Each structure stands twice: as C-alpha cells, then as structure tokens.
Image (cartoon, rainbow, N blue to C red; front, side, top):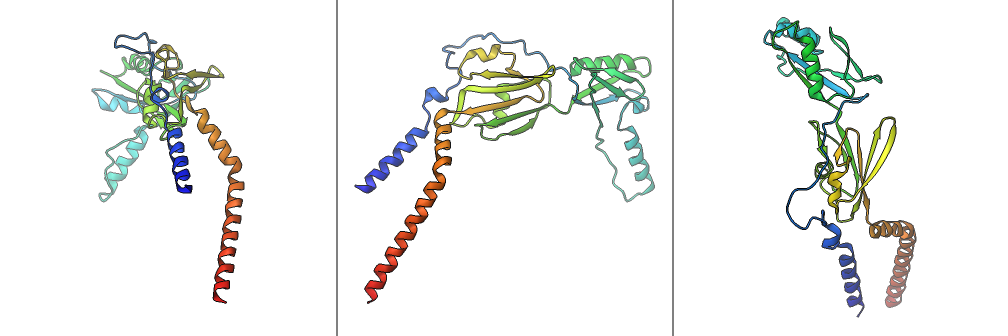
Length: 272
C-alpha cells in the first residue's frame, strides 16, 4: 500500500511539471497562413558608447594605409618580420576600435572628428567614402559594430550575453541563440529592457500573441536585456522548497540518527 502511494505521488509530480500544449505553444492567435502586419524593422543606428571597426581600402593600397588604425602595428610587424627571418609572418591583421563619445563623434585618422551617432553602418561608410573621394581612387569603407550585445536571462536553456553580427536582430532570434524557453518559461511575459535616450524602458512581450510583430521591441537593439519570467507554479514551488529545505534536511538527519540508534540497539540485544 505504501509503495502504491509513493508511485502515485511521483506520477502526480511528473504530470504537474509538464506543461500543456496551450501553455507552451507560440502565436496561438494565428489560425491560418497569410501575411501579418509588422514593424518596418529599421536598421540599428549607432549610439554614444558603441565601438566600431572601420577599414579603408583602395585600388591604390598605399594611399589607404594612413586611414586605418592598424597601419602602424602592421608596419612594425612587417619590419620585425623582415629583420628576423625566423619570425612568423602576420597574415591576419586586427583592426582597432573607434569608441563613439558622448557627443556621438569618433576621432578618425587624418580626417579628424566625424559625427556618427544616429547613422547606420552603411550611412557611416558612405559618409567616410565621400570624404575620401578626393584623396584616393575607388575607396572602399567597411564599418562593423563590435558591441552588438544582447543579454538573455531567466527561463531559457542557455542564459548569457551574446554578440551578434549585422544590423538587425529579432527577439525570436535572440531566444533561439539562448536555446529557446524552458517548459517553465512564461510565454506571456517575456520582458525586454532597453536603455535609450538616458532612460530605461521595459516592454512585456506575449509570445502567444501575433501582436509582438507590431511592437518596436520585436527588433532588438544593442545592449538590450531579455528576461523570461518563470510560470507561477515553478516560482511558488522553488520558493516553498527554499523555505522548507533546511527543515526537511534537519528532519531527515534526525530520522537517520533514530533509525541507526534503533538498529544498533536491536543488533546488540540479539548478540546477548
């Protein structure tokens, strides 16, 4: 009888911990295929504090050298390599980063101060390319945003901070990088925390609703934090377990001590 009770209790815990299809399914309001309204998904613009790498090349390579931060390092490496035949030739050159100051500017070699805040990577490349048109033939400018970081925490498989290439990232893509929500993730309360214009803004996203595609927070920006809340059942169970765990361990220890005492007393009486 006791074994049956244990099995029933175990089965109840298993069934209680498993979410239903209604709890786990996304986009439940979408009942048929077709076009959905969505935000324009504008490309992210550069903000103060961002770090950029900017490389300049040309059909006349020597003219582009002064406009790259790696040039002095590359020249030093080449000199060392020429002086010491046993040294390794450095083929992969790393570019230094340009940090956007509080005024939205960067200090660019030769060209000086350039305002980049509020521009996309492509717009910055076009701006610098236009400034170089008179000093070198066929300039090519490549701009990369180094610090496109998004932090995903809470009820996901792989919480952490992720660095993404490119200009545009959706909430669903970020959750995919983090291994998707666990079965305890509350799909109706996924929080996006964003610092913008000197303030902190919070948006609650409902993954069961098709309206998330209309939200300006569906497309993430650099340094956004995505927090997936736990469903109430898990939060309550974890809280209860944390509260009563010391009591349970104490009782278990006491029970073990009593059982051992009874065992030794019984064993000693049998020896007599």
